[in-house]
Length: 258
Image (cartoon, rainbow, N blue to C red; front, side, top):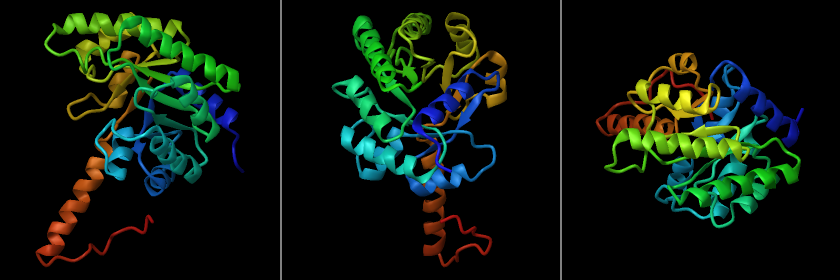
């Protein structure tokens, strides 16, 4: 049975508001989506924009909106689960980007502020929220601020304060969640949760991050893994290729996942 876009959006909304942290393992094409979706623990699917761009031969942030949506549609069509997509900065017209994303069945998105001026960043979030409301979908915007990731040489406390200020404004504009990459350390997460509220923060599980269960205890709503999943897969491919060149063979226990 195929679930409607509106139903998937409501499901994702409930997953975000649940007391348990939502773990989303990022994918980049149909087979990676199907492989992750086949696990009984999977409740939703997230695309990684960096990984989709790499699939098409582009640097992160370098592919067109058309390619970003085409990649997301491939994932949506492969699974019957809520799909949240990485849509970079929302492109030229973020409201139209979200309307088009909803049109292909996407029910949530990461959209980054790239440290645009404060008021402009908030206005873009508000435009996305209005567009989703007009489409009648409980679209789950994971509003990303780069206050820490692009903070440069400024003191970390200044970047944290900026992330909280921007995040609170995004929440006030209607975004369900605030994504703060670069802020995965315990002491930073504690401050972000205090500033934004429990169940409002989304983090990325970079190497050196805490286990998801510890973020859950701190009040984090969601954890994703960005391009790291593709990097692990590519390492496995590279290592197998190197072994084959040295005279190895494909392992007998290789599963038929495709």
